[in-house]
Length: 95
Image 1 (tube, rainbow, N blue to C red):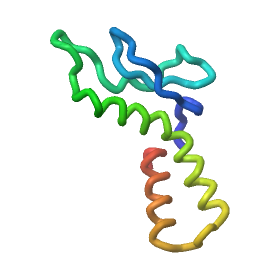
Image 2 (image 1 turned 120 degrees about the vertical axis):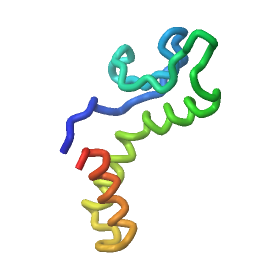
Image 3 (image 1 turned 90 degrees about the vertical axis):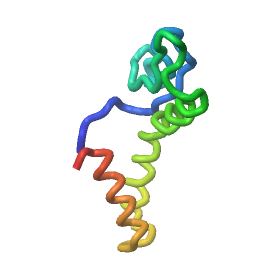
Image 4 (image 1 turned 180 degrees about the horizontal axis):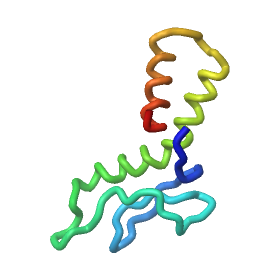
């Protein structure tokens, strides 16, 4: 299992210098990811896209935990959906 910043993560408000931030919920000043930075002319990416990306990143620890719990509970056993869940977990863990 790869190590990552512990969740839960939350989407933080726009910082005037850093952009759209994802931070640890327990430690609001702990940066997990910067989704979009400002450049000299304004934002370096479309306005709606960084909001969606930041929300998705913030949900990542919860999604990973849910997939692990689903597989541990053997909800459906050995099917294509479980294979997708295993592949997503492997991708998140860098395998």
